[in-house]
Length: 427
Image 1 (tube, one colour):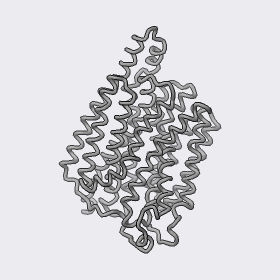
Image 2 (cartoon, one colour):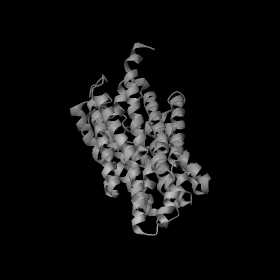
Image 3 (cartoon, one colour):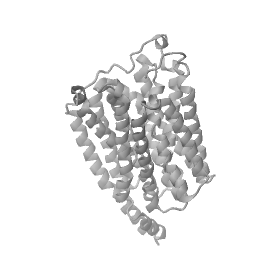
Image 4 (tube, helix red, strand yellow):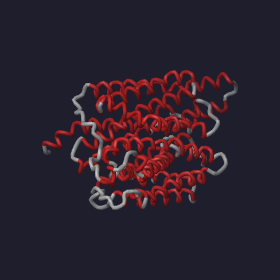
């Protein structure tokens, strides 16, 4: 191992651990949706899907403020602060569980999303510049694997605790003969999150302290691309870069489609009459297929295939898988929803660099704008929740996701070059 690799190996391990943590917490939502629908006695899927709305809307409100916070704290302390905020969000689950107050649960999720927004805004550029720029894509793919492996594990672990014997519990609640018995059963179910979220708060706080006092090197906060060429010297606003704005919308629809495949798949299965004991780990299947996609990306990009070509292939594959899910039923349909994770896997690594191409001194602000696009994970599932009241779940899923993939195809083909003209592209 060369000295340069030794220099950033330890920081990579630390940041890989952070990516694991926020992957674990992000993909708990797939389990929380059916759990809170039952424990808080919610009547519709639309209400339950406020879980994703509260969580992902935090990115919309906190992305740009996070960039200002990092300017004051630096990246290392910013990451530690993000972990402390996430710990606070976990602690809010304790009074929420005791009171079975759905709005309080949503508050906890929003606070956790706030912490993750800060953590994401710090860790993504950090891992890009901590080592040689020519291997940045490889490091990001490795971080993606850490993230999605954690995401595959989290629904299995949490559901084993909070949804153990879910069918039996659901039957007892439905057949309770008096309100007092029913409320007692619901309270016992709600209390199941107290222990795991207490442990989560302790672990996150301990990690925050470790990061704060660690020897993790600080990096210069000087913004990404140094190519202040003729393309951006005449610009005075990020809104003068149309490919960036198209890219922000692309992130919006991509995250929406990703959350549909990852978090909504359980409710999709329930609509087909599948039991809660079966559907509670469907999110893990989607995340496993995403890990496979990341591995393929590490091997093939850019050695064998360019990132924009990979994005085209992924968007077309996404349309194909969702269409096959629409025309099939039962577990076959679930299988096609789950393997859309394969199509989604390489989208973030491709969209992000294409969208910030040529921004020069506007790169940091442009990156924050793209992080705001993560709010698509809040909005698109809500659209599904409203449509499913009027349409079959397969039709609603098709309507919500296929236009997303078609727009991603547009961005991969045309959108990422709008406004760039003949500007030279980076390799």
